[in-house]
Image (tube, rainbow, N blue to C red; front, side, top):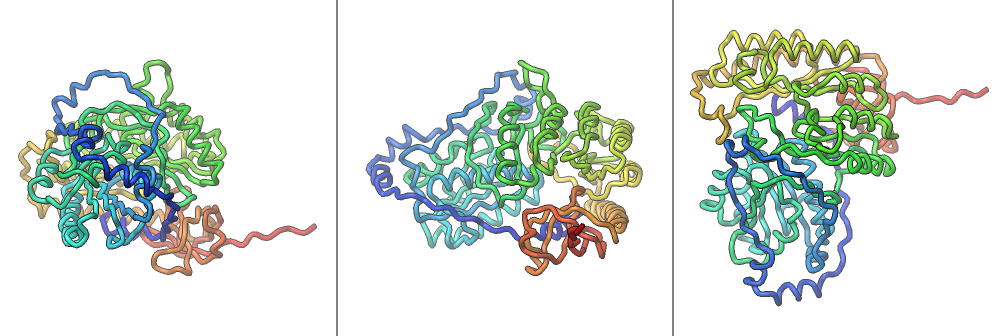
Length: 526
């Protein structure tokens, strides 16, 4: 699946729900009367330390601190009255979740959401550091926003997220993009009110990037996108240190939320009428391994999810090394635990997997797939694959192709390897020509597309259950939603179906989506 195909899958129109702010004239006057030096002394913490992979690998076993006392400072509670914010999100679901938190904080500060850059008083770019292409997009957007900043000097322009955790990125912004007011990282989102205050009234660019991590802040407000599906973060960070990946440095060490906090959040979402939740983590399978006071794993958490009255529960992302037998046993119970599993493999070659530091072989991955299929016969598997890893041979690439066929993946996110500064793989000499990498990606996508089309064809004339999320972006008269196996379905039906799970008979299968007709349920009369 390439970038264009991923965009085509996102065909459901979303709507914003503006919130009312409260008056904050007194607060604004009080802030204006505070000198800049006083503010800096009280609020501004310059604590920028670039990620260091050697230090990160030697992480100390520090106790994770849990904080339940988050609140908006009194003098910032209504600072956004009559103003608007816009957050552009790049990257993974974790970034999407962070955006929901930042939007929730800004909403509680009185701001309203907008999709129009010209209306915004605050623009935040929530960035991704996984691939060079994502980084280039962000710097392109920073450049595009410069004329707007010159036109509106009071506009607060901020860069946050994973890119902000990279030394080279922060230095580049400080040296070349002086119109950026605010830079902060992934570990201090809860300090957004203080950072906005300093950006409003400070005299210099505000930089607050913490390399230290370990605390978990609960009770953060969230402005969720709609009332149908919700992200629920269960843990933060990653300890796997794949040689190509910057995430352990940008997101920090693995630390799990307490199960009671997660269960309470999911129960609350269920009571609000949400139909689907996705449990999030850089490696959800490692959930609970950092607990010292109890034995409670991801399988245990999923078992507790199984008992909650919410129709659908998903999770992402999984690491094959931590996908244990207990988890498989729990998922086999079915019910609201869906039989679609995203299981990144990255390569089909044991030699390349070793160079990637994935800590499993081709054979071990295939054995895991065998166990999953044995326990869950109708399971749908999707994956992530990197082609063109440094010095990947033609034979090693062919091993990836045969693994894709053997597993029968119904979809895959496929990428050409992108070196990330600060990772071990970036120091490796690469003798694979760019054209060869592109050709391999093309061949891989051809195979994945073929397998996807074949799997989609099997749905024709069958009735599927679709969680209706909204109107199709391409046609407002067409509704769109996803099946339990995460297949996109477009069909005509009443707007009242939005937010509900309905039955749809599939009339046409495409490579990445299905077309159908809503099944009218009839009531028997005795």
